[in-house]
Amino acid sequence: MRAVLIHAVRGMPTVTDVAELAAPEGGVVVDVRATGLCRSDWHAWAGRDEITFPHVPGHELAGVVSELGAGVARFRVGDRVTVPFVCGCGTCEWCRAGDAQVCPDQQQPGFTHWGSFAERVALHAADTNLVALPDAVSFEAAAALGCRFATAFRALTARARVAPGEWVTVVGAGGVGLSIVMIAVALGARVIAIDTNPRALAVASRLGAAHVVVGGADAPPVPDVVRELTGGGSHVSVDAVGSAQTAADAVLSLRRRGRHVQIGLLPTDDGRSPVPMARAIAWELDILGSHGMPAADYPGMMELVAAGRLRPQDLIERVIGLDEASALLPRFDTAAPAGMTMIDPHLVLP
Image (cartoon, rainbow, N blue to C red; front, side, top):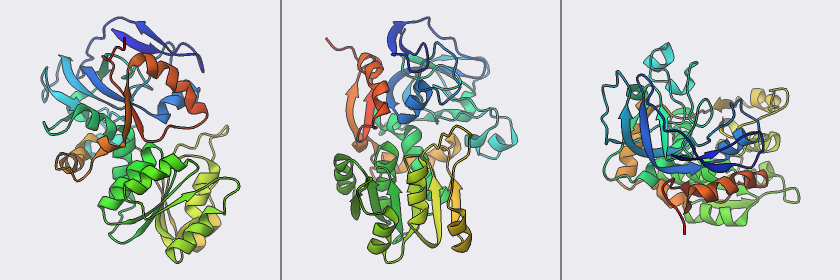
């Protein structure tokens, strides 16, 4: 099969013919029909995740089950499926409670083992992690749920518990940030989107953001702008980028007793990330993490997608093949593209 291979940290990815995969015990092999190109894949390429070389990235996917491992009971060859980017073991106390996204023995395609920038991918603990796709949900829409949309959905509904009429500020209008905009608007919230990219903010406006703000070193401080627009600060803030500056801007944009959700990864040399704790204490702010969404929670979100109330496919800017994907991954060094880029591993351009 063809796959995008990374041979070294920051090495140029190549498209290579590799050996076919075998289904693990309790797992499956999925023929990949769509897979998203995400900034998290860049983190692995840039050496910010522990991976073993050669490595195949990719963790947002949808496709068709092509092979079953021993012990799989709930799925059959030919089933249309997707999967969360965090796959639980299925047996620990967290998995049994429906919280596979924090499983201590989790598997992550594209990180702990070869991922979905390939014609096929192996997935573990299928009965715990696979999600059946309704006929009304396309492979592209399901892959767009991936880590970005599903993480955004759970961040707003289960973590921040956004209510209609509340102000939500999202810092960053890439795939995660635009997902936050779409979902928050659908929940009845008023949204402020902040980014340095005017094109990304134009998409946020189209999705229903009440205000868009161009940030950057020469722009007014984000917390000041948000306080003025909202009359005191947002009820909920989300950092969808993952830097010390964007996290602080998001937290300091909250009103008293607000809730901050950190989605953007905060990689630092010492593993510590600064948070304005004096403000969090004095204003009784909630500082929340959000790391994916378990398969057990997918049905409610999938119903909204199938009914057309949420349209993750509208965030897809372009569809490319594996060859173009291998060249695009290093470009995340400068900035993530607006919206989502989807890969069709079987697309071969002339």
